Length: 294
Image (cartoon, rainbow, N blue to C red; front, side):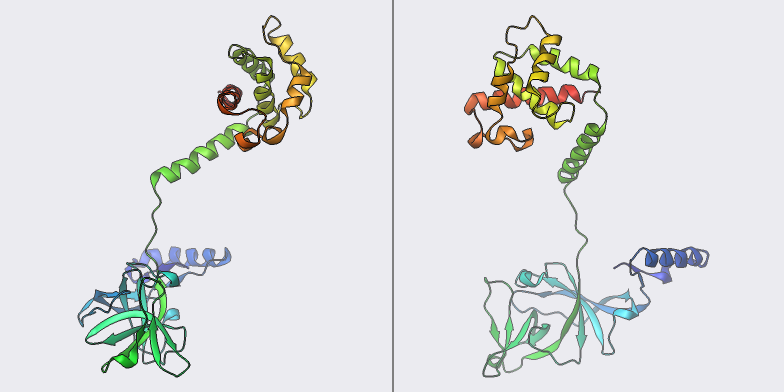
């Protein structure tokens, strides 16, 4: 749901604005024009212990008339964490409707001892009204214990603060997308040959070739299960290598997590552990980097 303040626009922009609304509706959005003033009070209203809201209007904010009720309304900012179970957080903007009867389960704004608070309204079996927090760290409040308690209104809508995401989290997603795009590029036979020759310089036992084989299967440049073909390819690329792979040995390595893509390798369920497991991962990463190298 998107709000737009049409009154802030110049006359020359209205036509484009109306076309924008029409396009949004066609795409399944539900835009609303902010055309009705609603008072916004300066003080925050505690979601924890009661607090004074004050009676001075800080400003008037425009809201779509479709969201407003027939009864008087106003806006106020929430403070505290006692209503976090109801998804109301510190700084959220609450739209409060007055002159309405609260029902069990309604989130209400109440006044007692000269202060205001936001809680959930509920009556017990004996008909006693309670204000119930949505956080176990806070105690419920029985309204009968207050001589001057009064219901101010019911919270009709909660407007969340615009969230922000850490730069590091964004870059993690972007880098993952970049890796996926790289993998979508065709890996040439020349790249496979270069990768085998480069990896060969780091192979100290024949079975380590399994890490390169598994990566090539993951990258879809080698057929899964074709151990003999892979061994022949390595022999063709580095015929004088001291530790050439043997198909039967590589096939024995394809057990447990090693039978799955490298990203799913798990030391607990692998045919090797400790430093040997890390060595297989190193060869796998080296092969992957060489295959995807620009």
